[in-house]
Length: 336
Image (cartoon, rainbow, N blue to C red; front, side, top):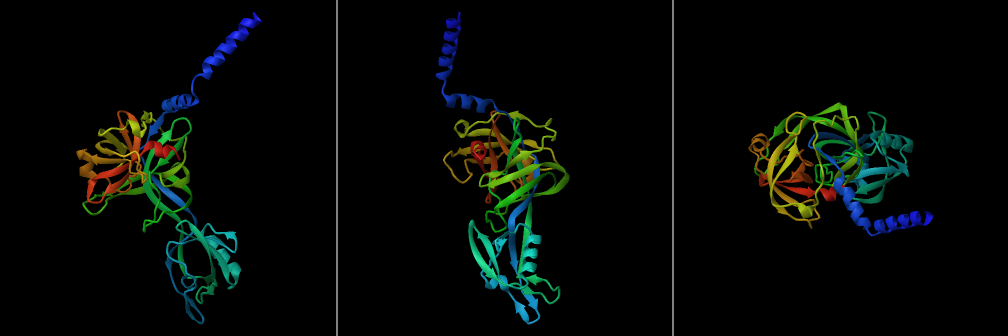
């Protein structure tokens, strides 16, 4: 009897061993379910440092000075440390300047991904009595975009489908982002040569989650588990290899807080593209065209669904034709 049991165990083990591990993983991924997003979200982004948005003069007792500019600081630079002490907020910077007492401070400066050091001697402002270096800075950014998906099992979410940029199209490094539900209260329609945009009102009492990763394919983090998912559809994902030219839909919010389904056509699939432009899409839904002119800023991240499966997200609009735009493959977002 013991020998029979031993034989059965070995036989079962041998059967299991012939199933490739990759096949088991693929099967698990195929059955994973995702809530389709489409809700507009307001992102309060904490910049990873004090970003310089302007250079000014400091009026001291002995005249006007421009310490930061003379030290080579430029608009768009981010001050991340002062004498080796981390600078994350405006308050951190002001504290570092007061500690200096007017002595030269060695700042660590981040510029387009690279870091360098700059020596700046703060000057006492004759009106306020505080030490200044002649910069206008910000430590937070705000914007709106669209949530693409929420994993039903883990509540991990992805949004936007592209990187976060400032007004000068410079990619930004973000420390963290608080995410709130955003009510769309108006639309500046897109016209040929000028992108439109959604106008939204942050609902600070309705948190959607928190993002802790920002990269070239979007914002990622943990969604609020208390969110009411009853209106959200569930879908499996489909890789770019399954996407086809033809009809599809996107989910976007262009009024209020409820996502709506809109018809589009996928006119091109480019799995090899490395710039978040795996699809070329065309809006065919007359309702959306009437309301927005097509794709507008704030719709980035709108999920693209084909044959009931989530295949990607809207990322960009064609300036010469707002009914056309680009999309990223969902597998490239999930890879992050």
